[in-house]
Image 1 (cartoon, rainbow over the protein chains, first blue to last red):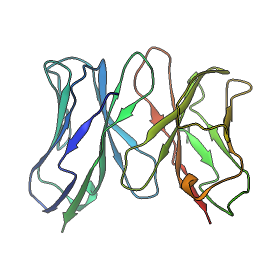
Image 2: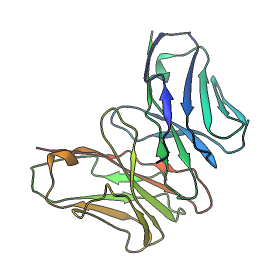
Image 3: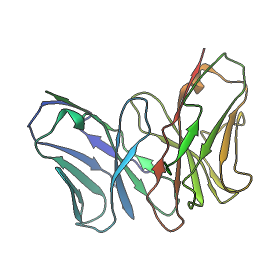
Image 4: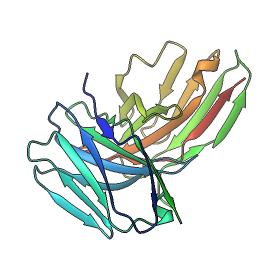
Length: 110
Length: 113
């Protein structure tokens, strides 16, 4: 069974701090997505990375796909209270279904 | 709004009752997925359709669960004889063939009393 492990599980920081969330697996994936989910809502897509070593930036968020396509990271610069939520990585492959990570619950205190 | 929609958003039912949820995907998307998410966990795959064909079902999908997509557009997920363990958020997602990116709906929160 493919597993995606995220770390840390919980993160509580002050507004303005930087943070990095990691998503690791022993399997190789064709692509990896990052989603953000708020309570009572569905996951909202942030980014899809497909190429090993790829780096994508979305305003204050920087996403990196590992060279071997087994891991990924999400870095947030100068976190804001609006960044609060559950961050999920998810990997796709030939089976078409997404395998989700365990999630990182981020709380940004004003 | 042309995103994925789900109805109802919330459903409270008594154990043993049947429930049905509906998902309307993004209009040009031919793939439709159902996932289940419990508190503190990431979503888990249940089943997926390509057009009207159901191509894969998870072992999580017991015989009390059935999903349909009769015309290749909207889909329904029915749970018969609900159990308290069925309480969860049921998420629908859609995508285009050949792409890995899936777009999720807002989910249906099911509570079985």
